[in-house]
Every structure is written in C-alpha cells, then in structure tokens.
Image 1 (cartoon, rainbow, N blue to C red):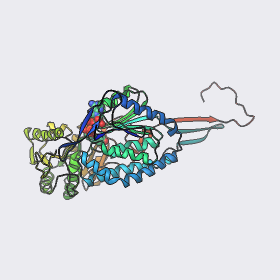
Image 2 (image 1 turned 180 degrees about the horizontal axis):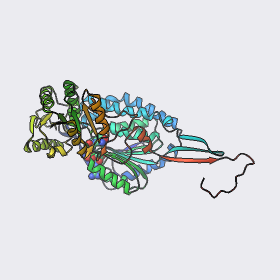
Image 3 (image 1 turned 120 degrees about the horizontal axis):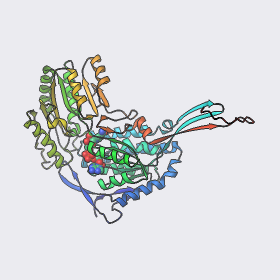
Image 4 (image 1 turned 45 degrees about the vertical axis):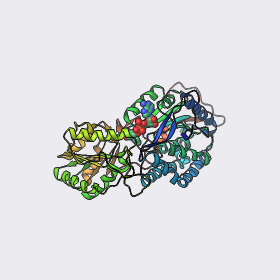
Length: 500
Ligand code: NAD
C-alpha cells in the first residue's frame, strides 16, 4: 500500500499490520479538505508485538545509568530543534494550525524534554541515617515497566511529549498511540529518539483506533496508562485501566471561563481573549470559551470592543504566518461547531459575530469556521453545557463576582479559568475558592510550565496525579523503601516481640 503512515516498533518502521487486518483510515489536510494520506490502524497482534518489544527492552534500559538515559534526552532536544520546520509542517498539513502556533506547541513540548534531562536530580530519592540503632532507611523510585500513552489530535507534538520523555528517562519503555487524525508529526518525533541513541524497543508508536487502545488497556504487561482526550473517552480509559489493575491518569475535556471584572483593563482583556478563544481555532483544552462579564457596563464594553477587534482576524492555511488561525480538524467537527452556534441562536442568544460558513479564498473546501461571538448565553443552553472546541466565544452576563464564580464551580468541567481584574484582593479570593485545577490572574491560558504539573479538577481529570513535572515523575515510578541494618561487629541484639 502506498503512502501509508505506519507504526514504529522495535526501532523499525512497519506499515502493515500483523495478522489478517489491514485496516486504514484517511488523513485529511483540513485546509484543503482533501484526504492526502492514509494511516494504518493497528490490529491487536500489532500492538502485542509492540508490547513484546518494549517488554524485551526493559531490563537493560531500567539498568542503564540515569545520567546515560538523560544524555539521550539532551541529544533528542537538539534534534527536535534541528527538525522543527519539518515537524511544524507536518502539524500544519494534518492538524491545520498556523506555523507560528505549531512552533509554540513544539517549544512547549521541548520544555518537557528539558525537564526530563534533569532525571539524575529528579530520581535521587530520599535517605535517612540512623533511623534506629545501626539502621539506615531510604526510598528509591523504580520504573514501572511497559507504560502507554494515548493522545488527542489537538497537540500532536506537545501532548505526547508531556508523557514519553519523562516516562523513558525514569527507566520505563513506552508505547504511544497518537491520534489517528494527525499522526505524522508524532511519528517523526519518535523516530528522532533512535537518532538520539535510544535503544530499539524503548519507544514504540502504534497508530490506530479503539482496537489498539483496548489492547493496551487489557494487556497485563502494560503497567500504566496516560490518556489525554475527551471526557467520555477519558472516563472509559480510566475505569477500564483501573479495573485491569493499571495505574491511570486520564485528562479530559474542558469549558474554561474567564471572569471580566468591572475594573479590568478592558483593552488588555480583549486582546488576551482574542488569542485564548480563537487561537488554534479554539481547539485547545485550555481555550477560553466563556467570558463572564460582571455588570452590564463591563459586558457592553467587552462585546463592543470584541466585535471591532474580531474584524481584523484572518483565517487560512497553516503555511501563511499572517493568518491568525486555521480550519477545525474535520468536516464533521465543523458541522458540530456550527450546530452549537445555531442551537444558541435558537435558544435565544444573540450571534454578535457569525463565523458560520466562511469563505476562505483558495480553500473553499476546507473545514473552516470563522471567529464567532455570542452574547446573552445562559446556563440552560445546550451550547453552554458542551465543550464546543471551536472558535466560539460565549458571553454571559452576571451581577456579581460571586455569581460568576458559582457558574464556574457548578460546571462539570474544571480545567482552566482566568480572572481579569486590577483588584489583588478579588484575584486572591478567586484563586483560593474557585473549583478549577489551573487558574490565571490576567493570564488567559495558564498552562503550567514543564517543571510544574498540568491537570484539571472535576470531570476534566480522572486519577490522582497530574501530567508531567513532579507529578509525572511520581506517576511513572513506584516508590520502594529499604530499611537496612549492619550491626556493629560483636554486637548482637536479642529477640524483641514488641512492635518498635
Ligand atoms: P478523543 O477523546 O476523541 O481521542 C483521544 C484519543 O482517544 C485518540 O488517540 C483516539 O484514537 C482515542 N479514542 C477515541 N475514541 C476512542 C474509543 N471509543 N475507545 C478507545 N479510544 C478512543 O479526543 P480528540 O478529539 O482527539 O481531542 C480533543 C479532546 O481532547 C477535547 O475534549 C480536549 O479538551 C481534550 N484535551 C484535553 C487536554 C487536557 O489536558 N485535559 C489536552 C488536550 C486535549
């Protein structure tokens, strides 16, 4: 089969499945609307082959000195930088995000590699001397074995790098199942690891769909699963992996609100909201999709200024850096996003700026939705409940900050949020009491840097540990505590029956 995006197993590219299944799926260029590639969908046997390769590589990799494991990451970081243009082009071709946005995503991914380079420090463990007579005790952090990652379409470079650099540098072997909608940049990144000196079998990529995922979830050799994607699938992954005795962290969807206080610097808030609501076509789990204005004066000013600012936004293909954002991922998703706009309209909201069915010259068949502003949204509306995941900003009007916070706390998702204000006391009260995992104060996309950890609350995260950073080290290792006695020569202690 020509032009099939295959799998990376045991250091080799494989473009067909083991067994009798040769299922494939089209990969579209969302700007043109054309299916330009196909991706192999791994059979159960193909995934099992990858698991076997990872299992075989584990004993040697786990015993490789941590400084040598870290050196692979140093070289990997350099290769990522050297190959940045090629990676960003693949992201653009299959995801549709504009080159500057792809470069930003890659940079945030590289920061996780840089954090992983510190593994010798991160894995030093804890030591206590003389916890009893001639007794010392220490805790060390051992790798789990074969671990898996399942990732979404919207960050094909960054989200996988939330997972595998840290997992690998901690001594694990990894199986990645990227999104089948835009797999090529992820695959290229994984191939660079071999060039960086990673032994075969330590990193494997299986492309595929539910069959591949279910194999990873049910195979006893897989010890832990990291997932990022939509909430219904996150919940399924978490419950299935947990029932099968695996450690699991499953990050789900979001509905991120910004509170616009009456004292906010409105011009600044508008600028920040433009990027946070419409950047990457709103296909970010941290996108701000709801602006809650406190008081009609703030709401009127916000809507007026947004309407003017949105006139200057340009949409188009990834390779024209003057575009602000590109298409959404599929035709079906475009229809879904536009369906939510229509449903808000039907339920009584005002469509202030209507991005449905935009005409993008030269890309008439692309999956484009223009920036959309909806005013007068209320909690009963279908478009408010759902994660629209498109370039749509909904404005809600409330009378007090408490009312705004109540809305956020009542929503099923709790990924990110932001307050725009000049009042430090209000900001402090907000960050202390809001039921959301990642909070911005005049920062619209408060995505934690690589040396903190990323995760939402409520139905935005299933599991205990957040992704990457210090929580990532904990997730990909298990603690062992050793207590050791070396009696002084000639001294023998008698039997003791008390628990001391
Ligand atoms: P998705 O849930 O459709 O897919 C994610 C992964 O799950 C893919 O690899 C896909 O192949 C697999 N999958 C899909 N259906 C499955 C099924 N029935 N059984 C087993 N596996 C299945 O998500 P998506 O559309 O690719 O990504 C967008 C979603 O991801 C949004 O909801 C977004 O908020 C979320 N997301 C969350 C975060 C976060 O950190 N919380 C980050 C990025 C994206």
